[in-house]
Length: 174
Image (cartoon, rainbow, N blue to C red; front, side, top):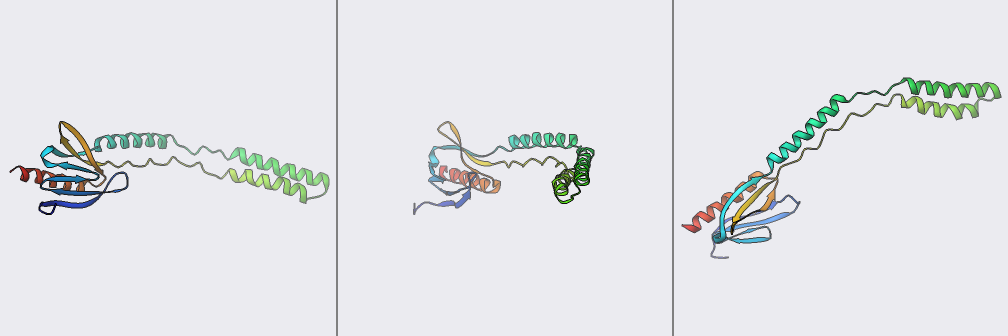
């Protein structure tokens, strides 16, 4: 490829987390693991799943807002407080009955404290949904078939690859 004119040579972070080698010359395009002859490429364009992702994010956001609107911290403090008082009362009764404070106090004070502590726990509100990110791709029409050959979250880099491919195709045909 020494006598070929290079339009773009770079590495591109792709959706699956790896890196793809990009090299576009006046004869061929190396896009990741595939090599295309420019003569066989009919068209090149940028494609994105942004509208699909925006719709999914919107649905998730609406569901979250509905959950948040219906959320109320309805944890009643009455039940645990009454339960704690019952435990403390049983402990006091056992202590008075037996004349000994240590065993009944420990047996009833610890569970009573745990029940009382549960009265002051707050119910957690729902967590907001994670935002999905759209990907961008280089879409090549070759031999009557459209193929998304490289997918990345970086729109600017994908546009740069498409621009270089279009330049190479136009200049190789003239």
